[in-house]
Length: 79
Image (cartoon, rainbow, N blue to C red; front, top):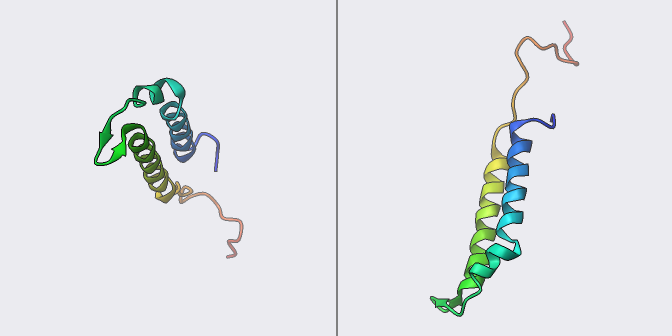
């Protein structure tokens, strides 16, 4: 898979998104003494973002790879 393929760009974007969402300045916004449904806000944020990233990674991994052009010769083609 070439380095400039759409799947590689999406995976790279997801990495940077995860790095941003799990970094200190954003985490400090959710570090407040608030409890929602018995779960502290920070824990809910961490598990929610983690779940979101796993879901997005699964969607990216399931996407079909780009197929070669029809006129491109195959290596094992014997006529």
